[in-house]
Amino acid sequence: MLAVSCKKEKDPLAIPTQYDGSTYQANTTTQYGVRSQMDALVTEIKKGRTSGVVLDFATLSQLYNTGTPSLKSLTTAYYAGRLEGTGNWFDELAKASGATYTPSVPSAHGGTFGGYLFDENGLEYEQLTEKGLFGAAMYHHAVSLMQGDMNSETADQVLAIFGAHPDFPNTPTAANAANPDKFLANYAARRDKNDGKGLYSQMKTNFLTLQAALKAGDDYNTERDEALSALRLNWEKVNFATVINYCHSVISKMSATNPTDSDKAASLHAYGECVGFVHGWRSIPQGFKTITDTEIDEILTLLNAPYNATPTSYKFITDPLNELPKLTQVIQKIQTRYQFSDQEIEDFKKNWVAEQGR
Image 1 (cartoon, rainbow, N blue to C red):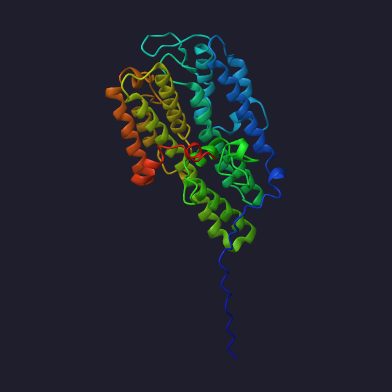
Image 2 (cartoon, rainbow, N blue to C red):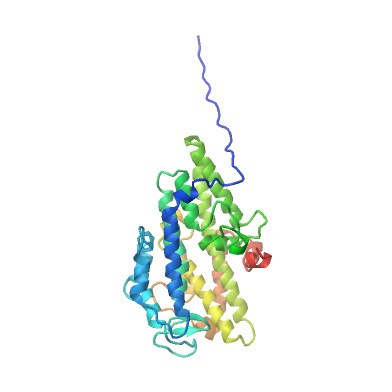
């Protein structure tokens, strides 16, 4: 007698429309501690925006090193060295604070200009700290979680360090959401037209798929891994789409006839955000990002903020005619790397949260 056995094919993965947040709060105590540390550090640095207020290096370092885990312990070794190593950025912040700065006038240590704190070269180290740590600490932490034995608990933790919540409100506006988006999730919402197709919406689908696959068990490891891969790519796309947004902002303001000091300060601030968002991804393990460190170095050079040389950030303000084309090149490089369509590049000009009042 011939016996034949047939293996039952698995059912397609059922993906819910809502993320199960029943254990989210209990699972993410550590990540919310990190989020609080980030808030405390950035709040302290922003005090330096006020003319006459002097920042204290020891206080900044303490805030960066406090907590279990601390922000520093989650940061790539490369970026942690920039914040606290030789010629470090916390020291630059302390030296620049308390003084005033004019981009066209040589300065020993920089100071405040138009409500922002810049070093003598026109670089805003507040942005290199905050926006850089979105990649160098928060995404880096997410990557470490993804490399372990993932389960529903770690999925919640990745969601929390992204800055989102199981509600997925698609807005950072506290008046419009009980659990507004923070950190890079805030910028994902800004890049999303709220039509169900944007980067925020795609990331929500990635998280829903990931959670469903983890709950469904080992038979759905392929779906789990595909969701993780898509999640990492979209996380990265949000980061670099935001660089495009700020490049557009600088080009727009500094292409105007006779920009005011307020326009110049806002442009130098937006430019600083570009540098921070880009630089923070340098040294993220290549297996967990699409862009290469070589490409990052090329972009930083175009931004007049090379990782291995003195920045000349002020030139975007003092010589816009010759410098602004570099920002167009940055946009083109990012578009090519992530295969963004021309329409997406156009859409990235806008903060859709503000445009739609959400």
